[in-house]
Image (cartoon, rainbow, N blue to C red; front, side, top):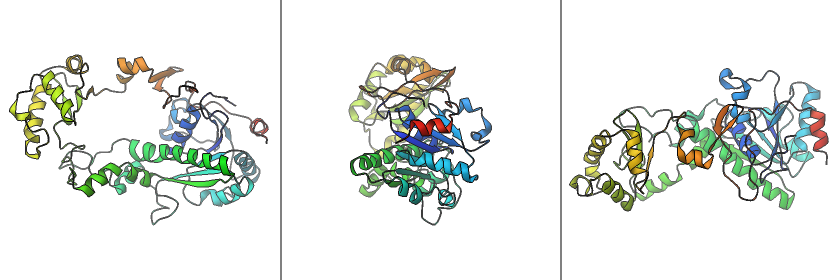
Length: 370
C-alpha cells in the first residue's frame, strides 16, 4: 500500500480501471491521501497507446490485475470492493450488474459502501446505452453551442468541461458527500455522476443570465463571456504571441486604459455599450500588436488590469507565479500539475509515478481486513 499523506489518508477506494473522468476522480482522491487500489484488466492499455508511466491520470496509486470474466478472480474483486469505503466504476449502465458486481450485490455485503458510477449519459434516459465522448456531452448540455467565433462550428475545447469538470470533479464531490453521510449513518448509496449532467451544471450562471435577459443573446461570439465584449478577449501581440484581457468590472477596465495610455480615448467611453464593442475590439487589436507579449507582461502584470499572457504547456511551468507556488512538479522527469487544492494541516504528498506498480491481492486484503 502506498500510505500517502493528505486529508483522506486511510480512506479505502477501489477503482475499476477505465478511461477519462473516473481515473481522474480517483487520481484526485489519491492526491488527497486516499488509499486507492485500481483493478486493471489483463493487457489493459492507456488511451492512444502511450506508455503507462505517462498516463498521469493513474498516478499515486497501485493496481491489481484481475480478469473479471474468470469466476475466481471476479470473486476476489468483489472481496476487495466490499472492504472499501468507496467503489468507483466507469462502465456503461448494466455492465457491473452483468458481472455480478453491481451496487445491489456489494451494498448487501457492505451496507455503508459508497458506489460511484461514472457515465456519459447517466444510468437512465434514452441515450444511456449510447457511446460518446466529452464533445458530445458538452453538445447536448448547451455548453458547446456558445463557444467560438460566429460563423464557424464550435471548436473542440479539449476534454476539460464534461470529462474532467463535469464528470471527474463531480464524482469526487459526490462520493465524498456520500462518504460523510455513510460514516455518520452507516448507510451507503449509489452516486450517479453523469458527464452530460455535469456539463449542464457548469452552465448554471449562463442559464441564470439567459432567464434574466442579461447579456445572453444565444449567439456564438456575441455574449460577454464568449467573445462579444472587447474587454473579455484574447489578443495577438507583435511577436505572434497572445494575451488575455478579462477587465469586466469598470475599475479594472479603467486601470487597463490608464496603463496603456488610452484613458481619454472616446472609443472606450462606454464600456458596456453593445454598439461600441466592435470599435473597441479593433482598437485593442491594433494596440496589442504594437508590443511583444513579454513587453505587455512587463507593463500589465504589475497592475490590476485582469491580464495574463497566453502560455503554452512548455511555458506554463516556467512562469514566475507557477514556479513560485510550485504549481507544477517534476516526477521521474515528467513535468505535471501537482495536487490541488492544498491543505494547511494535512498537506498532500507530491505525485508518484503514473502507476504505483502491481500489488499482491492477498496483501491488500490482509491490510484491509476488518
